[in-house]
Image (cartoon, rainbow, N blue to C red; front, side):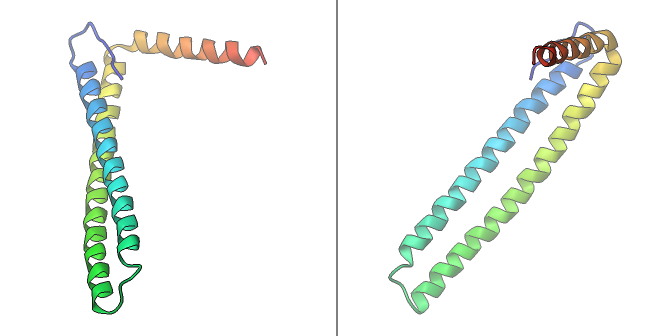
Length: 120
């Protein structure tokens, strides 16, 4: 999401940076989730022939990995929420600094929605 501004307020740059950072956080979270699934599948394959102490050790290792993932997901979630708030604040600042372009954009979106709905 890139918003340009002629006022030099820096709000558009902040929105752009926050959008990129949020996309990275989402990618990191998705990658970590895929890793968790892969580790879970590996655990299932590795424990099919195990019993007793070997199974307990495998469960412990998987439990540690799962706890690590919970921590990372919690951290990524907090980062995503924080960055979303920063993006919203930057957008709010931009709209207050440049109300007419925002009003024009909202009118254009409304017109497009009206045009699409009137064709049905």
